[in-house]
Amino acid sequence: MPKEKTQKKDGRISRRDFIKTSAGASLAAMLSSGGNVFCAGSDTIRVGLIGCGGRGTGAAKDCLESSKGVEIVAMGDFFRDRLEGSLRRLKSRFKGKVKVTPETSFVGFDAYKKVIASDVNMVILATPPGFRPIQLKAAIEAGMNVFMEKPVAVDPTGVRSIIASAELAKKNNLAIVAGTQRRHQAHYLEIIRRIHNGDLGEIKCAQCYWNQGGMGDYWKYYEKDGLSDVEWQCRNWSVFTWLSGDHIVEQHVHNLDVINWAMGAHPVKAMGMGGRQVRIGPRSGNIYDHFAVEYEYANGVRLMSMCRQIPGCANEVAERVIGTKGLAYTSSGGGIIEGARAYKYAGPDHNPYVVEHADLIKSIRSGEPLNEGRNVAESTLTAILGRMSTYTGKELTWSWAMNDSKLDLSPPNYEFGDLPVRPVAVPGKTMPV
Image 1 (spheres, helix red, strand yellow):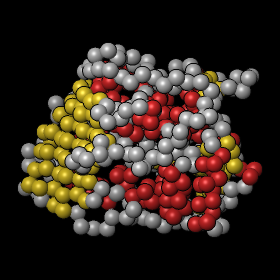
Image 2 (cartoon, one colour):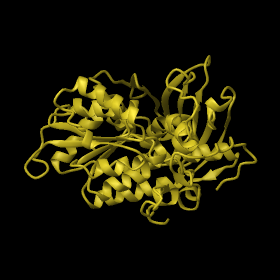
Image 3 (tube, rainbow, N blue to C red):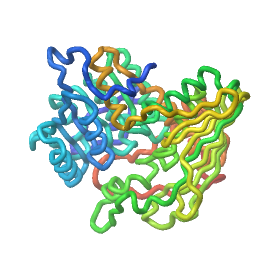
Image 4 (cartoon, rainbow, N blue to C red):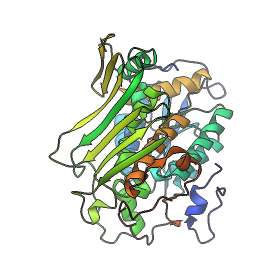
């Protein structure tokens, strides 16, 4: 893939310039920082926040709550109102820990570069997922430790970029922790440990679900009015595939990540079906509202995956792994094993959104940085593979998606201008790319 180029002379940033790149033990119970001296005699972690929406603000809050000696010193977003609103909320809650000034507040598509160039040693990446690959690349090349929200890409091109950046981080002893918080949640850690220890016997099959109601009350909708196409789509990013990856990628990646974790592997192929039953009109963008995907792993184990965002239907957000000696059931509320080695987790379960930051910061200070880049990249591609199979109606392989797919969803230029909405995919007519 071509390397990132510089900004065009007319101020626009080309998509081809913007996105391209060459292709344990958890600390779950440790919510205090401690550790060795960090950063030339000071253990203060100076954090830059890139993406100041609800999740970015929440991640900054979790980071500040997780450990001592952490400050937010720079912030950037596409939109000034999002940045200013986030800054007000953070300053009102964390007096003395948020040291952002007008000189370290940045707006625009290149705001991430300016945050990275500030006096920071860690960044939080929480812009829409379509921007994650280029921002991680820039952060790692600049020597930053990174917390990045899931998912980490919306197409195979982006996944390959994430993996390359994760390898560079490993080479340079930099930390990457992802927002797959279940990997930092005590009951998940214990159930997965027991699965890996053989408590279920030989794994035979699995299921995972993120079935819930509609998202109309969760995401604020911005009317088109006088907004350019790109600004309107970025403000309503969750319903456009080039920005969110569709809800199978943006949301269901959590459950798929748990199954990959339990299997210790990624699937080798996928066959999916889905569509739009209730998402109608411009407010619905071009994403689906339901998916059902069967994945197959190299050992023949099959995973049945379901996700739905439709009001008035049965809801479930959980994972189930079935083996020859029993089954494991996990959800955000707890974990159990039924069978010969029955077990129910009854220990402490600290807030995983806070713990993931504590784990990250502890690893930085210890000189043994966590690197979750490849794991989250593979779980993201698992979701993307399911979406691509569903959109096209074709059985698709992991090898093809990882090595041969040319799919690149981003627009030709990153600027607040014209950008027609891509048509909704039609299985049997939309072709794999």
